[in-house]
Picture 1 (tube, rainbow, N blue to C red):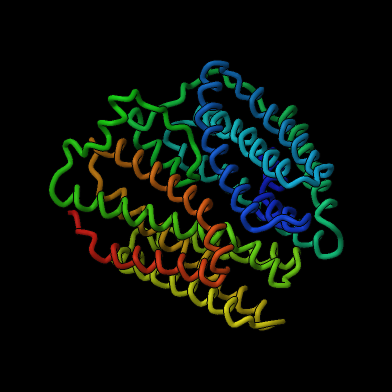
Picture 2 (cartoon, rainbow, N blue to C red):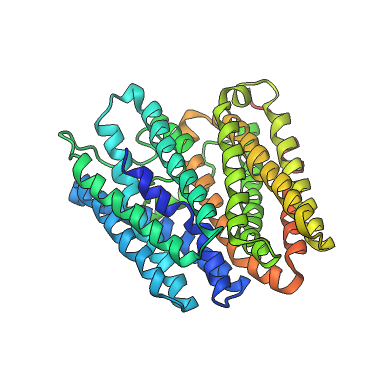
Length: 412
């Protein structure tokens, strides 16, 4: 797991660095929207494709090493590119290549530990990844405070190269090779894995089976009503979150916050979110989970609207910085983490054994579609109506989610 730390030191800041880099060389918010949308699509495609490649080759170490050396070369190439289209393309390729390590890393956890400790080991893997991302954001904030994004790219390249050498030395091929499982093969593993980090391979079913999972066959009454409404909430949640998150770094930078300041605000949100996740049991196992869920959604929507008002009133200087630090940290740190933990707990407790596989599959699909659509349409809203309206619209979607969540039927 150790090579994942420098690998994510390199990869963690990219989703903020790319928008800032595009703006620095004269691009606009539509270009930022295109870059993040294409990156998301390539990442999901990569998880599927590389998962099959992993099964065919049965070479865990080779794919991980390939990921790290490929990512190193691609990040390094950004230093020499000053064309917006090429930056977008390279970033999308980075997202595709970096996905190659997801499945073999997960399988190595399975193949090197007993089944009863999988959840613990997956959480540990996610902890290493989270540490890398946090360190990367801190480094990015520090470097951009006194030098350029180009120099940050050099540092990230060096970190990615370190992960390559560490993987060569530390990773060993397992003696027992496991196959990639579909969600229906081991639902308990899937749920544990999804809770640890929502990035894994889901085997694509044949067309008849694919159509069958949307038929709700065998799901009736309150469970059917719950699932349909939860789907609607989830789709709108990821749509609104993507609309906000796609434009927010660019909005900060275009509103006179330095590149270092943008990274710093994102760091604070990530740190607060991690702290809240640490107290997962307190939120997920309480009797007031539903109240916490729709309250967190309503609070997140209110904070999005308030952030929109801050941009609309054109508050300047330290007051503008402080407002964004407080409101963004609360929305993306506290509110997101509480909603994520409580809603997932309600969801998994409410769906029955036979329907869990297809139910989770549809949920993952809707979450991905919502994220992609949000990234696509956010640029158009921002260009036509401004950042304030964009953030307020995202807040409105959170309000709708909160209202829908209050009407979720209770399943015993």
